[in-house]
Amino acid sequence: MRRPRAALLTPPRPAARASFAEDFGPRVLLTVDVEEEFDWNAPFRREGHTLDHVGELARFQALCDEIGAQPVYMIDWPIANDPRAVEIIGDAVRRGCAQVGMQLHAWVNPPFEEMLSAYNSFAGNLPAAIERAKFMALHERIVQAFGTAPIAYRAGRYGLGPDTPAILREAGIRIDSSVRSLFDYSREGGPDFSEFPAFPFWLDEARTLLELPVTTVYRGAMRAQGRHVHRLQRFIPSFFAAFSRFSLLERIALTPEGVTPAEAIRGVDRALEDGLPLLVLSFHSPSLAPGFTPYVRSAGDVEALYGWFREVYAYLERRSVKPAGLADILAAAR
View 1 (spheres, rainbow, N blue to C red):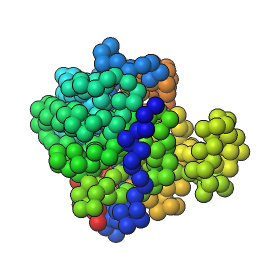
View 2 (view 1 turned 45 degrees about the vertical axis):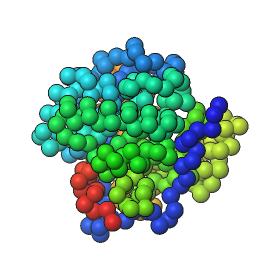
View 3 (view 1 turned 135 degrees about the vertical axis):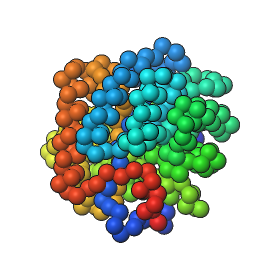
View 4 (view 1 turned 90 degrees about the horizontal axis):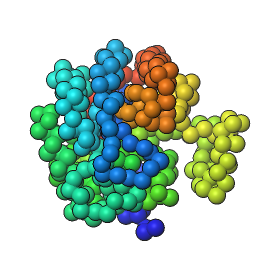
C-alpha cells in the first residue's frame, strides 16, 4: 500500500489548543453523518447505494427538539441531492433547530477522476486538485439545496489530509470535525489520530479554522498507557479486549453506535474530569433504521438508540452540560 498522504498529519502543538470564554463550558455538540446506505464490508462503489432511511430523519429531529439538541447534519452528495432529505433537514434549519455541515464521501461525490479504491476513499489522500473539485461541487450543491453556506466540515471516514485545511479556508469553513481522537486508520490507508487530543485546537496558525475532535476518552487504571496498548493490538487482536474486560482500560467514544448508555456516561464523567470544554457526539444516519449499519440490526435496536439519546442527554443535563450550536462555539473560542 502507498504511504497515505494523511500520514503527513501530526498532532497539534500545545500552543494550538483552543481556549473558550469562562462562561462557555462545559457544552455538548451533536453531529450526524448524514449519508447513503451501503455495505460497510464490501468494496467501494459509485452506484448501488440506497436512501431508504431518510424518512426517519423527521423522527430523529423530533427527538432533538425534545431533548434540546441542535444537531449539525454533516451532509454528503447523495443526501444533498435527495428531495426528502432536503425537505426534512431544511425545515429544521429554517426553524433554527438544526444546522447544515458537509461530509465528503469521495467515492460517490463527483467529479470522478480518481481510481476507485479503499486508499482513495480517504479524501485527504487524493491530489489537492481532485479533493478541491469534489469539495467545491458538494459545497455548491448544499448551498443550492438549503440556501445557506455550511461552516462545518467532516471528511468521510475521517479522511483529513494535508491539503484539506487550505480548501476549507477557501470555502469559508470555520469548523472542522474530521479528527477522531485516539483512533488509528493507517492500516486502511487513512490517518492516525491515536496521538491527537480530544481538546479543540486550531488547525492553522492564523487561528481561523477550529478543529473539534469527535470525543473519545481513555478510562481506567491504565489510561495513561492507552495509546501504547492499542498499538500492541495491531499484533495481538485480543490484547486490548482483556484490559477492557478487567476494567483496566476502556476506550469510550461518545456515540450510540456500539457504546452502551452506561459506557457513554462513564466517558462523559471522564471527559469532564479531564476539563474538556466541549463534548462532540456523533453517529451515522443509516442507524436510524434497521439493517443498514452493523450497530442497528432490528427495530429493537432502533428504539435502544433513541433510548441512548434520552438517557445520555438527561445525564448531561444533571451534570450541567448544555447543548451548543456552531455560532456559540465560534463566539466563545479564543
